[in-house]
Amino acid sequence: MRSRPVVTIDGPSGSGKSTVSKRLAEAAGMIRIDTGAMYRAVALAARSEGVSWGDPVPLGGVARGLDLSFRTVAGASRVFLSGEDVSDAIRAPEMSMGASAVSAHGPVREALVAKQREMAREGGVVLEGRDTGTVVFPDAEAKFFLDAAAAVRARRRQLEISPPGAQSFEEVLRDVLRRDVQDSTREHSPLRVADGAVYIDSTTMTVDEVVGEMLRRLPGVPRG
Image (cartoon, rainbow, N blue to C red; front, side):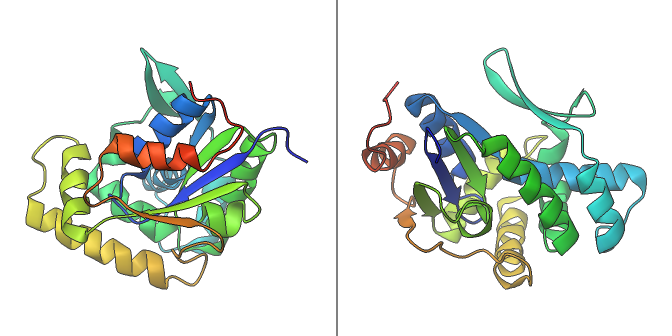
């Protein structure tokens, strides 16, 4: 029995999961775990080690040996891989597609799901990703599926890309739609709405409105 709840937020690329999960964790006094960043880190580590994104067995080894940590630096959440800040590197467009590619492999997912469960076993966490409510924590106390129109998601993704202006809106939209297909049709843990999850369409909603809706569904959690 967990002393504090586990909250999961799943959804497609650009739906607002990162921003919302940060704000929700802050408001509820919980810890945020960005599972998507973990898959991006596997893609980055594999690239640096010369491992193909299409080779499941060695990719599983990369995932199991991942030295990854989330730290707050100057008030901002940063991702460190083997002690190096890779927060910007994993947000490059290539790593977005790499994350989708490596996440399709069972050995990678098994390794990272084990890490995610260990990180969150005491509760009091907000996990965001593609399968946090379906696979990682199907017994989560609160589950959400955050969505938005593809064009809106592409615009949001374009604003996240480093360096700014690296891709046109049309390029980002094509990538978003391609990743939607990859994530929803993959064999292992395809993207779908978890049983019991609250579906939220953020197309016309502000971040405050989305966070407020989620907070209303977390009884007993202090609003910081």
